[in-house]
Length: 279
Image 1 (cartoon, helix red, strand yellow):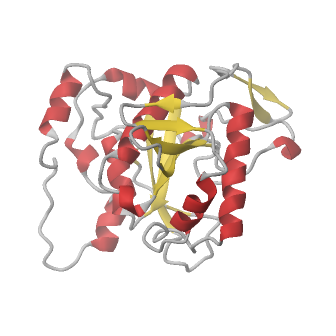
Image 2 (cartoon, rainbow, N blue to C red; image 1 turned 60 degrees about the vertical axis):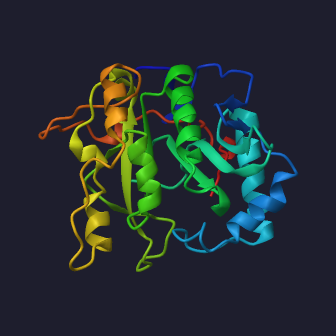
Image 3 (cartoon, one colour; image 1 turned 90 degrees about the vertical axis):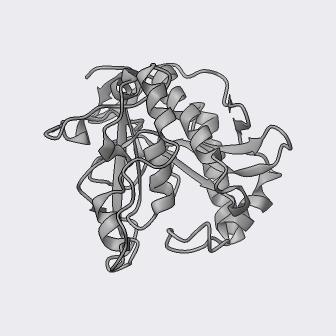
């Protein structure tokens, strides 16, 4: 076992010491611990059908409060998690972005995921990508994690767009999310991943990184749809930045066959009682 982990009674246990701080900052955003004042706005967000389109159901106020408390507790225990996000300019709460250890038994478990959920008024302004970039920096530079994953329902183009902007690589296999009932239209998920080595490379992206997951294209395309450009308009500057070493990216190969993801170390306690679960 390499890195800041050891095996104890069949589980992987973290040995590294976390920073005492629980906040991160970007040019426009603060990723911080949860506050009581966040709860009402968070509940409204979780009751918004637009925000919850790719989740099985909206949440009640009680369910939303429980989720927020779990995230607060996880950050207090670990020093990281799904942070509450606020705008520097107005101190407005806009949602959450951060790192999490999925409790569901996923095909690529154990793993650490990056995720986000923002209120509808804050969509389309680059906030999710900006905050997630800082969370990735923290994961790789400070936590020294070897790899990060992200996953979503195959129809969720918006979240997949964020994953691609983070230079995460889509995996060809989809999976059935175990927490969603069989037959549910949101049960099939796709997943992306990014390693610390890939992020550090600073090499030019392959064109395939800008394409949607094949399952998403198949599930959402309509007869007569025109092919989308491989590189979105305006992305040329990002590629130029990558060549200069100012942005993380990865140049894969057509026959790239990486190891199965089940070697990924994960933050799992030696006893089930000490695990912090976030639905």
